[in-house]
Image (cartoon, rainbow, N blue to C red):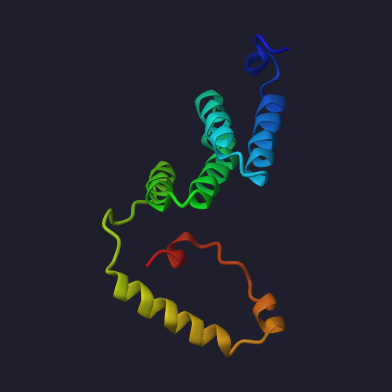
Length: 128
């Protein structure tokens, strides 16, 4: 099984490696997350099969406080989805003002009302 598992048992290999990377993330073994995610990204046949590995790797980078690396990887993943964002982030004061506006708006919403909101799925509406 181990010699040619990616060729002979592709779906099982994607599932097991993805679960393994997530398990290693949950116990803060970030070095192993990076190693296993790299194997998945290199071995996967489609972008969809790489998504869980990318998500786990991005969370791992964030947990290690490597935010710039996490953001860079996010940009790379989004570009593979043909979503292109400006490469320079907005000024920190703009982000803080938007954050405060969002916080004030959400403080006016009850917990039940918040849970009743539909999840946004239109990519156009999600982008500024």
